[in-house]
Image (tube, rainbow, N blue to C red; front, top):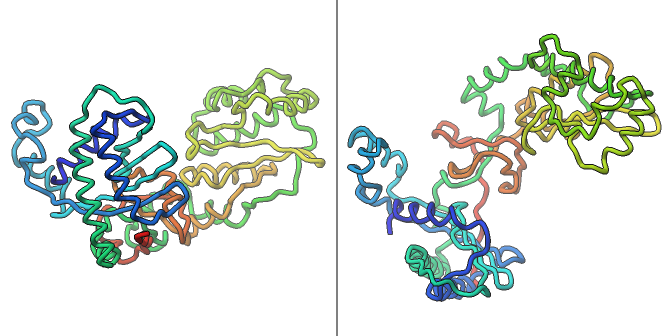
Amino acid sequence: MTAPKLDFLLEILDNRNNNPESYDTKVKEKINELYDLLDKIKPLSDDEYKVLYFSVEKGNIEEYGNYEELKVDGEVDSYEEFKTRFNEDYADEIMWYKMTSTKYKNYRMISINSKTIIYADMNNENTNFEDYQLQELLDFLIIKVKDCIQKLEDETYNDYISNNYSYKNRFGVIKRNVYWNIYPDTKKKLLNEISQEEMNYFIENASDKTNNRIKNMTSRKYFECVGLVYENIGYEISNLTDKELYLKYADGRDEGLSKIDENSSQEFDKWYNDYSKFGGHPWEIIRGHSFTRVNLQVHNDDNGYYLSLDGNIILRKIEIAKIFIALNKNNIPVQIYNVNIIKNAFKGIDYIGIVPNDIMPIECGGYFKKYKPTEFIHMEDNKIFKYIEWELLENIELK
């Protein structure tokens, strides 16, 4: 099997494995045969987690696709374009794959290059559907695993993988200031969005603690803070009031914050002590996912109220810095959790994570052991290769 055929099968099978499946008898037999082989390998964790790396030949262009069909479908305009796409997708004569497997009770899961191709409940009743594509893939994997085991028995496997496994598929880190030196436009882009003066102010003044407090908090005071934020991060404010800006740009699940008397500290206190029971998002002033949303959260203690931001949201580092500067210059108490993550990024002394092209470069910290980058990119070319510190591959052993 060549790489284009393998990728075709992986794409098909990955799209349908969201829940544990029941497979036909022949597929189950092949899954058991594959796991009998994998049982010879020492697991890397308690859930029988195992990793193997194997290579597949690039193959020829005929295995990549049918040119005539792609041209009719408007996918390509010429054979030259078809050939270029093939050579871009398969730039190397040998393509590398990482297979991971886990086993827990009656469940089996196998992924290849982050695509899940087996998610089986081996106790489920058999289906009448005979999956020939999955059988073909499992036959291929059985051959590859046997080859890996042979190399392990010969004590050549780990050295072979370490010396040959493609760096396009590996994880590594590079110092941000080194990356800036190689790609100066990335530093210029940053400075187009936030000035060096603003970054210096943030570095000098931002902290994970604030000793100041707001004695009597009201929703109006919070909306005033939010209005100040939107103005300083460049949102369109028109002639809207602070509360109207909050209603326009914030998450919307405010748990009644916008309904209480804006000028009553007693009503705010009562609401504040009750809102957490409902689980809304009253503090989400910039909408987004867990890695892009920004919360300007209100806290209180015996001395009064104060605000906080989360410095983990590295993709919003510019907005977080501008929010802090606007509030701090107006004597509004605000602290930033994990503030050094953003400070180090502005200084250029943190690490950027390099991840394989088949992995989305967001929230990939779990792949890194020595350093814990919070921002991730793909290696677009070889300019940075010699500056990357690569993560060590797993040492695979037989039981």
